[in-house]
Length: 169
Image 1 (tube, rainbow, N blue to C red):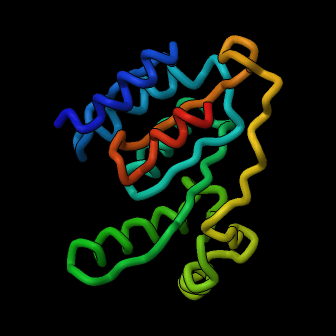
Image 2 (image 1 turned 30 degrees about the horizontal axis):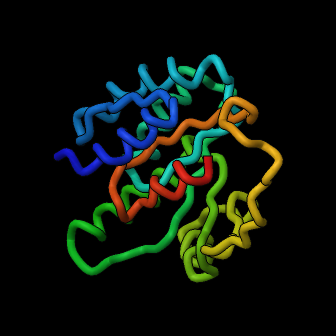
């Protein structure tokens, strides 16, 4: 699947290094080492994860960088099929574990769900699923004039909006 190629091309053109890792269930643990190698020089304070695959991978990376915390964002819970119910159960187990330090809930319903399954309210925060964006800083004229350290771990597909991240950087 080359759906990510336009994003890779745009990042490469902007001078941003890109590393593409294999996707799939068998890659989750294997990807932890190259991700940790990419992240370790910056010593990030946290890893942000979304979905059970991202959270499992982040937990494996955390084993290599124990002082780094894992923050998870839950945008929604869907229980329409056996598969989505299974993923919700897996995600919930991960959220209850020590693998995840903090959960950002995109709705009060999600926060209520997690408190209802025994997750401490201190581990949860409701953050509206929208943000106000300030006008861009017009003083920096090139990427070289800015100090940006950012690691994106996610699927390079249109619905994830990596083009907005590229534009923002």
